[in-house]
Image 1: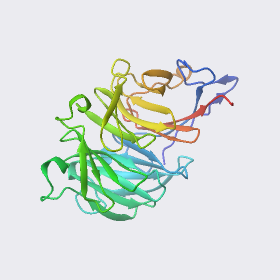
Image 2 (image 1 turned 135 degrees about the vertical axis):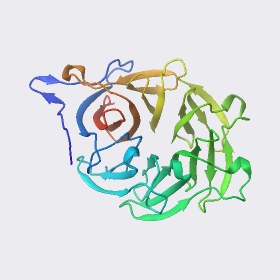
Image 3 (image 1 turned 45 degrees about the vertical axis):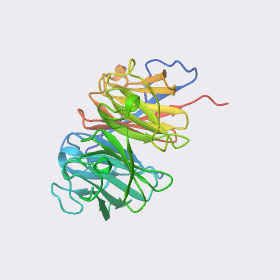
Image 4 (image 1 turned 90 degrees about the vertical axis):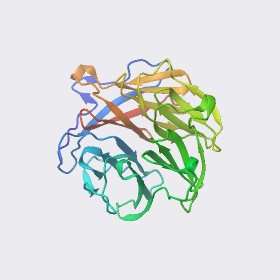
Length: 306
């Protein structure tokens, strides 16, 4: 595997990656970068999706290589599945991956109009796709993102119809929301989704961050005047981390609408994000996927001790 690792401390210089911190005592320390462009193990081509499981294993939607790669917590390559195609375990432009429960891995197989399910070791389990007999308002065409709720329901972001679709544990459609008839909650150009608490659903897109309750009712929107091009987001307790490919940074919110910090690569090392398109969090680690550089950048998240 081609892997680049830069420690957070070089000589007497501690490389802090935060640009501005409105919340005293919060900072983010750059630890390492993994990957690089290519088609070998641990290399990526136009990657778009990133997920981390509870044991620290990372799953990358290596979009340009039409595969999913699994990396160890150290960044070492573990295994992969895929290759271009439409058979089980093959992909045509996988754009997102979800692995938060440590058991399942769900992949948004965009151009194949389906969601594929694997176990944590990337063994194929099954496929979800819209059926011809489903009502028009409950079908999905091109899945851009997918997540599993605490109740075992699958939530899909439909890139074609620009809405959210919820499926029950058997894969049957239940409700859709955020579509053209959603009024103030209409999604214009949705990119990614994430669960907050208590069961709220956050959606990133051209209009900023849109928030719904678990039943699909629109709650509020924020960030439209702060963010450039919010590509992805993850929610940890009260914190919201947004990978912004327009601003080329990760914007951190402790409260909606009020940035509490911004993560960039340490300029002292001559580094900068090219196009951050995905962000994932696990305990005190933040992982950022850069599509342009084909790298995963790792940061240590430090909070004040109460």
